[in-house]
Image (cartoon, rainbow, N blue to C red; front, side):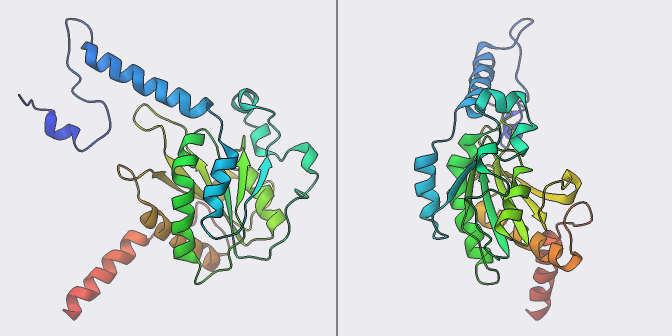
Length: 256
């Protein structure tokens, strides 16, 4: 038997029309909530399997990845001290001594963030889509895997790599609908001290329910092109990919 909410539930991952059992939720809905909460907790706390993930990233064809760490000693400290996740590990030395200036246009940082699961599941195919989208036009640096990492750690890495633009692929904070969502943070001319307002984000990457890899790569490519024209990224830079696709569709209609 269907009810009013059945069709609407197919359009959203939000919990709607949960029903009632007396003054409480039905047992089924309570168990669904607890399962989602457990998945979110696991996504935050389970560390990234760096060796297996590095093998996946190497298969993308951009070279063997380098592994760097933030100043947070472990997952517990990372969650308690966001500031340490933005700084390079002290033992790495100033400028990340294990990283070399590549002189490339685009750098890629694959950061575990608040969902290592998201990075493990989506990092390699997302990197491959970015390589396919950007590789013909730009020089791409070998990828860097960063653990216990916040977005701003990419500024240190991007500067060390000598890239014009850095893309940080990072696991987003899990919610009770999605525990494996990936985000891409773009910073033009990366250097330590960049503010969050100087970045652009492509979020909600987790096909098939969320944004797909080719679509996310196209948005990132458009933002990179815009940043190079403006000479900066951030609040002044807007995603115009939807408008571009609409104008191209109109041209095709007129030609037809």
